[in-house]
Image 1 (cartoon, helix red, strand yellow):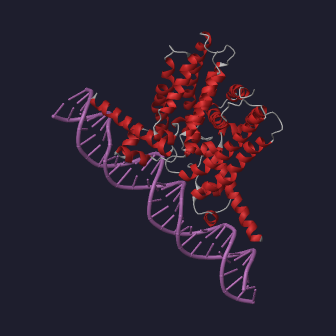
Image 2: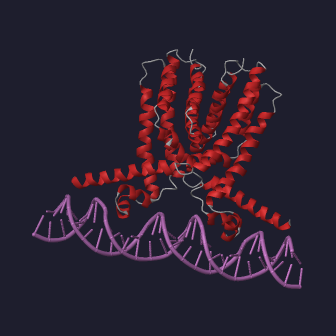
Image 3: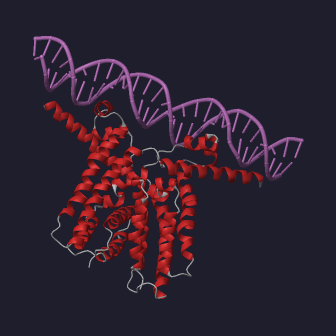
Length: 201
Length: 201
DNA sequence: ACAATTACATTCCGTTTAGTATGTATATTA
DNA sequence: TAATATACATACTAAACGGAATGTAATTGT
């Protein structure tokens, strides 16, 4: 049991350092030696725990990025005591306003990976899709409840609004990255705020 | 003059093939040998015309991607005879509806590059920013005219709407890439349509 | 207590990379 | 027409890459 624990710890270390490097330099620009330099372990350690670079890519998405989306976007949508349009506005606004400078400059880890996907890395695409799907489903659920409660117009297309909110959010993180200017977030939030308010009765 | 022409042709060939490969595989995943295989020229040819990979990256953005944004997004916004909200809706809708399967699967070349930018490639970021700026300024101009004409509400924040439209558009191209499903575009267009309609009087 | 397995470190290998140096045919200029 | 410059091709180098092979100390199961 002690050995198992050590193994798990090492794997977690490699996964975490991999995520950081993928986030900072991109997946393709990060090499396995790069990763192992960060862990202060050897290349042998890497190939003992993982088959190849692709496998660590999958693990980073499935473990780290998945956790970030769950905790940052999906979980906050579960607190449905308040008015739904207000909840939506709060969740998106708070998320954006609490980003660190590093997160502002580096954008969304999931979306960055999407940018690196070509015809080749279809595996990554499929896993990322499942993450966005979880997020989308939660959004749809929340909007539907808002409609039932009479807080959101009955003719609102929940599915359409959900995917559009996700698109807009991913888009602004990308554009903010290029602009490197906080004004982007503020101006975006104003329009997104109007859009969300407009869903309400 | 004949030699100059040949030189220009070769450079254009290298730039075009570079763009295609960057678009399909990403900038980092594309090597100079990769590019030169596509051109059927030698490595010597590459280093005769360009200093290094970074320089071809810059050229691809400045020449090819810039042209795509100008022709695809900025120029169509100049046709301001029609009602402005209608123009905005048409430009974004037509653009999305006319994408080839390849363009749907590969997303926006500019946005893909944004995804690959980390702390390192700040040069690319600055050039890309200037492209988005041109697009944003044209959008602001169009919205302002709409306000003057009384086709768009006076209290609309042109700058905010402009950047939000860009964000939403870039976002949906990213999400469409992950989903690989046409429904995404349709559902997005419904909400974006409502947003744009809501700008009008 | 001993055999087997695990968790790595070290060493090595073939390939690929960015980039340079050199060679050569063609085009231009004097 | 002779000298020069251009447009490449070929051949090379040093470094870095992914990954396999091998070695070893510590931990396990029997």
